[in-house]
Image (cartoon, rainbow, N blue to C red; front, top):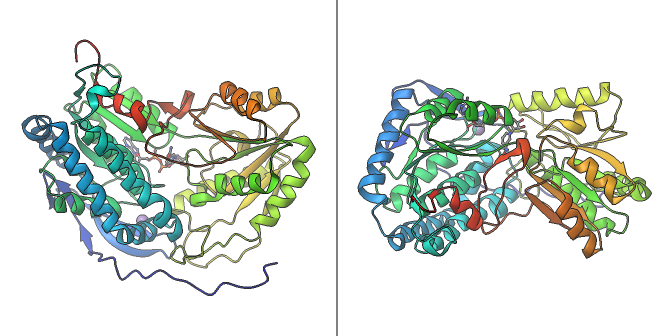
Length: 481
Ligand code: NAD
Ligand code: MN
């Protein structure tokens, strides 16, 4: 038991100036749109935050036209050095307005303020800084001597890292001379709309960035629009497959960043307390709403009992509750629908015979909450071992040899990330080589850096985001470019 209790340390929301309703950002202006509207709420309180315009197919068409005109007349003709200045300016404004962005992200998404403040917003700004630096050096990126932009890019993003996913999408697209139409997720549109204001503040030419809010239908209209040259999507494997089918046979290019079921692998020689911190970070960061979450713990049999005991002890100290409290570790589940999905899979885990342990904690009465949970006695066939839960739920499996760890880790349709915990450098290199995962972390987990490419194998999608590799997805390269 903790020896003391923390006093409440709420972040103030006074810095955020919420409007009662928001329009669409098309051609540099916030406009009403022709569709209906929907509400976005604070998932920690169920408080109605604002009404959001639902972009119709006609609105999406207006946004794509604005993006096309801006690309051919302005942005595609501008020198890389000039484009870079705009990206630097956007990055600096994001830093200046970082508190506002963090508070708004936490209100709309439910993630702890310490994460939006210390991870989401600074990493988003870093993506703009990093890509600003590339804008005038594209011919030295190893992608041919005269790489050219693709044109207009349609981008669809999820709700788990609303501003950060926006940055992952918009920064490389703009650095490479493309213009964008971006659709944020329906439960988390607010930071994208504040970003629209930042584009105005940076004097970004109208039409270079367009933001259309809405749900699946708006996303589909964007994906199916005939004048879009490339689709960049992050979200569920199911929708990713539907997008791949819908653009098959067209000239559209695509990058898809989909789900995951990552193995976090702990060997008997690992520093146990550090590994436990890494396990906690791997699955409870952002309530486990992380595509690369370490949701399958593979622990060597000889230390399994000890690791699980220390893990459960650590989980008892996680502070679950008000996301606006600076001491909160685990915030609210993003939506009622996501909470239902998590609950259904956890029920299935119990029904299939895995052993459930949930950290004792008092959950708020309003809002959407799920206490940190771990399953032991999990077999590889259980649904909690194969399906992405996208919540604060860890499944523990054991192994005896490195070969068995590799076989179990790779026994998944996904392949986004993996973690290795061992003191042996040679084993890290051998394992990293064997694991079919786009990112492999060694003695750490969930580290993100704009210089490092991120992406999947198999049903986790294709294409890379970030780093030099990420530029390629936005450029015509080679002969014919
Ligand atoms: P989703 O794939 O339904 O939504 C992602 C985005 O795609 C949203 O902006 C959504 O409006 C849009 N969209 C939905 N249908 C579309 C369509 N037909 N055409 C174009 N765009 C469309 O994901 P979700 O419903 O928010 O979450 C469901 C599951 O997806 C989660 O449980 C999780 O497993 C997974 N997920 C993965 C990630 C990731 O980062 N890889 C992020 C969020 C969710
Ligand atoms: Mn919301």
